[in-house]
Length: 340
Image 1 (cartoon, helix red, strand yellow):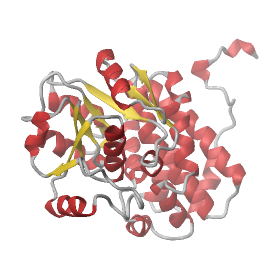
Image 2 (tube, one colour; image 1 turned 90 degrees about the vertical axis):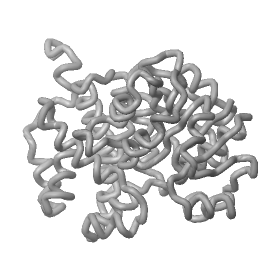
Image 3 (tube, helix red, strand yellow; image 1 turned 180 degrees about the vertical axis):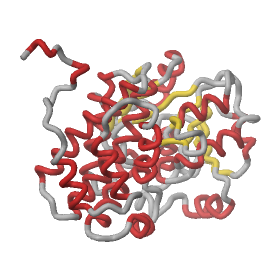
Image 4 (cartoon, helix red, strand yellow; image 1 turned 120 degrees about the horizontal axis):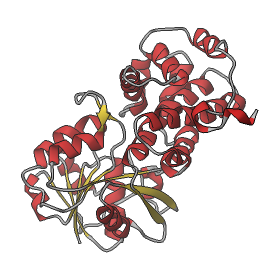
């Protein structure tokens, strides 16, 4: 198949290499002339993926018309660039061919909607959207480290096709119809990874890390179900799987930013030092806005909002979390109160 990857960051480079190894003809597109020239010259990005080289047969271009020659399009740009990328490519994408979304986060300009919503609005009925998400650091996928992800789509045929195109002996793809749950898991886990980083940076322990991760997944599921997602999705790869890998990995930009904030740096200083998009920072703001229209309690996400955007002191935020009203661990909507 002829495949085009739109976006030449670490994830785009990793996926382009994977698709090439799967035997497909791969083109990469970037809107930046300087980036295009550097990649064509160096066949890689030493900062993002050290030691990883692109095969010479992978074509890299700034020409949007490359989209017209593709059997399947892959969107691998940061969350803030999804809307602009879709608009730039709309006139060139072939009708009826799947568009795969790798980006994780929310569309701030679209009212903090899911990125799949932005893509679907841009494409209309032209092409089905498939969200490919899960615990998958580009650094490891690029080296063929065993990885599993989820291809979520409302179009089963499109999800099945993506499963076939991307799967190989080191990259296993499951399918799911739950786009909302899969995408919310991939976006909200960044909030929890940022919180875990802050906890570690402040000198808290493994107990605290476990607390954030377990109550974090409960919070993600609670919010996801209210938004229309399926509860089971949050116990899978795009929920607890992505949460674990992002909270504990040295590859995680969100965790690295959190470490700096926990050690005393201001959020904007930490993000600047990380030197890349910290999606969790923007996800905190998005969930805060979305929660206004959803009757659901999100204590960790709201604590992160107070810490990052309200200027609250970390110790005060922690104290307020522990001063909350006592309750059962089981969610009231998910069990029979008569059990006790």
